[in-house]
Image (cartoon, rainbow, N blue to C red):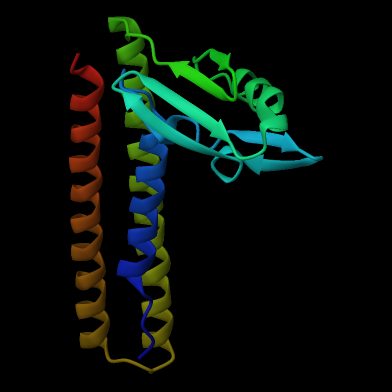
Length: 182
């Protein structure tokens, strides 16, 4: 009886959703806003977090301190190109990013982005369940498991899927509250 690692695969979907949510602004500074920015560093796209320390000295400010001071212009260019709504200010050997206050309209856009990410996560969870169910049915057809085993495995897959979808809903509600709170 092969195990499909449903929990493991579904946990990865939640991890991905979490990283998606980190990239959605909330009016508060968070290193996740720029960690995914790719800098063209010596000809290869390099994640910003590999080139600099990213700190949050205040609720609405990020400081980026490059390890290589020569990369400041490249980092500044990459942040502007990433179109994340933040304007970099070079301050000596550091780059300051001030996170502007969100307007009501912008907050609604971010809630829509979060909702879309949550819906994509739910679709991914259902696809994993479908793949598991198909695998279980093949096992039953090949007489590797009994019909009763199949029924139990299908029920377990549904319960696991329901549990993870509830977690996605909870994470979305938290993110929505975070975005809408001033």
